[in-house]
Length: 211
Image (cartoon, rainbow, N blue to C red):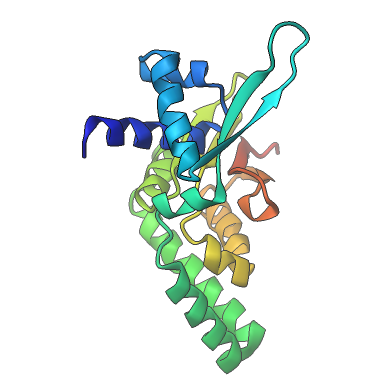
């Protein structure tokens, strides 16, 4: 991949993981000039990969905010979305909604067993959340984690590689929350942002349960 292609991929990644931003902010994160970033953005705009809107500010000129278009989903993993959707539709026809729900429960149990081999019980909660984020990154979720000053742990998934299947089968999303709660006993886990609800990412907060 040439230099321009690498720069484009970095811009796509930042807009995907950090959300809509100005060219100047992207330039600062990339260590290049705003003019260089704008050249890439306008080229990408012409290819339908990004779009923008101008936000009015109290003083000065409007700020041009860049964001990804729906077309850029092809640049991120989708875990064979069409195949998964077809299988789920066939399973629903063969076994009905209750049968599919049982299949999703078994999938959650299998994931929990696989994840637990890396998220050992002797690790701290923060270390286990960090390992969970690492596993999810490997699976294509562009996951990140952080610890807030009040001790709350945050898990963010900037991409859903099974989005097409999850739109067909809501049990996949319910299973994700059940998986996290199974892996992190003694905690309260809430989902505050949800890609299937039209938001940019899925965001979970994780707190120790008060006794």
